Length: 282
Image 1 (tube, rainbow, N blue to C red):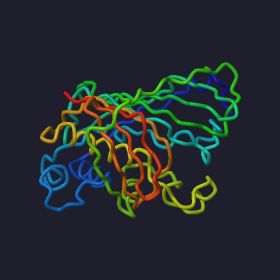
Image 2: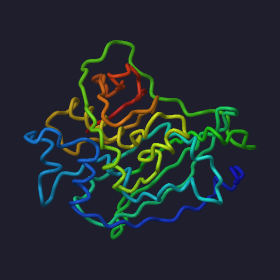
Image 3: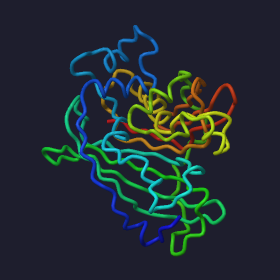
């Protein structure tokens, strides 16, 4: 990492103004797994309407996206060893089916974990480009495994959501497709870790992994449908921790509690990949 703590905290990311259409809305929904059942009326409301499709609230994480900014030469982060640690969002207004939004991303905290690397906390506000109305706020934690030892950084990581002690109220499955990472990257995340086998192997994975934000959308939608089967656009907030990599084509078993807590494991490997999740509905 070339930047000091003070420089990283004040690093100025450009404001992103993005115009999107109903096509982008449907592409996002398809990219996180909707449409696998072509007669599912609920899914078709997001992917089967030519005009005015429903918008998944989790699309807030890809709108106004500043790109893979941590690989900028002036930052100097070891992006090959970078991991997406946590993701969250709050929705203040339904995302329109088409329009123009503005995203502004900033670094809000840096925590040094020594040999384990840095925890970098960032936040993005998403507003209507015309009216300035706040649509959503998203939160992310990235683990920079090769960049520990930063002077003046914090030492205490933020606590994760505490999971219930009892068994889940529901357990449901969610499937991914073998080509899903190649579709999801069309939302604007072109990190080669998700499409280039050589880059994936250099990072310690046997093959390209699924985007964390793809898993975020897939699991969040699965949980929301379980908590409120008839509700559309009723999600108010969601947060989760990424506990391990997921590969395209794998199947998730998602545990859901009535209070909105959830976790998910890959059935094929019996490995937890999402933990400490919580989703709130209206």
